[in-house]
Length: 77
Image 1 (cartoon, rainbow, N blue to C red):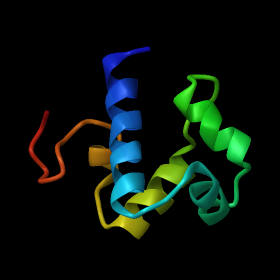
Image 2: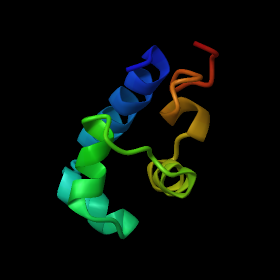
Image 3: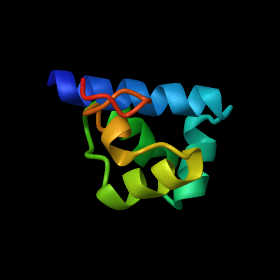
């Protein structure tokens, strides 16, 4: 798994924890199956851009942060 993908998944997990969300609640919010969300974390499925945008809007963070391109404060990592 690439470093960028690991960073992205770690950032998603961090936001899920910050917002007290489980895989099931995130899946419900995104109108996806829980197995799809779990698949992201087992490197079986890609995270769709539409899901990244919806998560970023809900959590008030940038998609660049979720993708691991910047830190939560907008600085390039």
